[in-house]
Image (cartoon, rainbow, N blue to C red):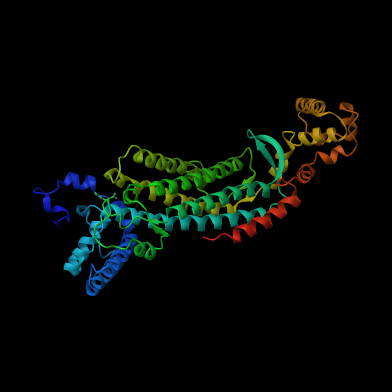
Length: 462
Ligand code: ARG
């Protein structure tokens, strides 16, 4: 069995039960890239500070690079008895290069090491999230550009409310993901402070240069307080919060797709490649991708609550509880990336069913507000206009008819204020096009907003 680097003061071997219970390498093994990057920066700094000779630093750096290669190729596998990724790499380095390997941990603790690794890891993954968000926004905008003239029933309370351009509806999601992008960038900016050199919690008597390691790892600056450096996990919580909000947005879209795809709606047709079948019902083509995105959202929220709860009431500085941060962080970032990718494909392949949409637009008196607004324009007070329109709705509903079934003369029976133009006003297209207020659904507006969204997305820097 490999000796643990901390075994000096122990007279018994660790129980196998405890080894299995305390190990984290099965999860934090993924941090080997960041761990090695951080160790190389630390070794270079130790050399500059005169704490490592030129030769020792070179041996360490080369050894670490070879270890990285071997982990990647699968030639080197981690030993859970060595707890975590940090000790696995350090022990392996010393096995390979001997004495200099033992000097790498000078002026460092696993506490600042793990905080550094996790910041580097999350920074990279937030970049990935931003790239995927930008791509998905582009997909939504391109889909929207083909559907400016596709009119759907806009809903409130999941009841027909007012007609809107389908493009307008899709662009609402672009606004949400735009905020998500901004949030992720903001979290990444706040995260970019180096804990390295905080050591266990109090700093170190060695003449280290924290500015040098911060710069080498592309952090903006070293953290100002060594205790905070090793106790803070706000950045992890913020990253998972970002993931949670993205999942909430994806889940709303997923839910809409499930509804639109259900037989009573049949507004959309989903690509076969993004649906699955039933083992018993041969006719089935289920929207499982959307359902899974919706379902996985709960797990991501769970990760956020797990982290917040883990950190609450933790005394300063490092506590082993904090080892439990990696799984929720990694899982939620994995999930959000996978969901963004798969929803991108689903939306790309989504097509609308025009006949079903037309049928749907005829139901539910969707242009009732336009009728009331029309009467107001003819001088009828709004409350009166609301009542008259309500009476027409009630009459038609009892007959199983729609607005389109009435001629100009029929309308006059309800109010003398109706003119022949009412039949045009109640068409969904005119309803949409009259809504020219800034941000409204008029097709001319929507076309301009598509251009605007394209420019905004193109200017986003990942
Ligand atoms: N595996 C540990 C973690 O992820 C690394 C830090 C361990 N530090 C300690 N003092 N036990 O949190």
